[in-house]
Length: 116
Image (cartoon, one colour):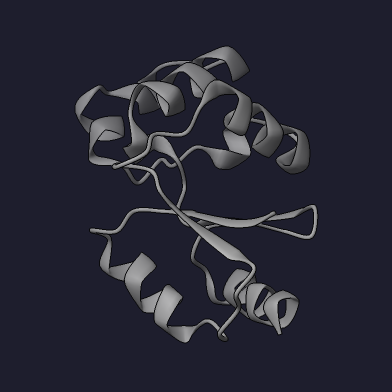
């Protein structure tokens, strides 16, 4: 099942979604309304290679908890992502068994190609 994990209130996510080709196979998963499960996160980790690859250092909580001055383990990354949706780098696409993480232009171009 092709899925996008996103935040409906995120302007960047909304802009990216508008740019996507129409695709009836894409399932939209709003991580605030429907938090990701440990099993879903573990699948993402398998595809991404690490929890750190899925972790957003841009989150305001990252700064407010002063996490940049702490040494985080893979377990820490996993727990923070499960604890609060803002720690997941967004959006995350899983398309045909491949993961695409984040909102940089290169990733979005790859996603559009994969959905076309």
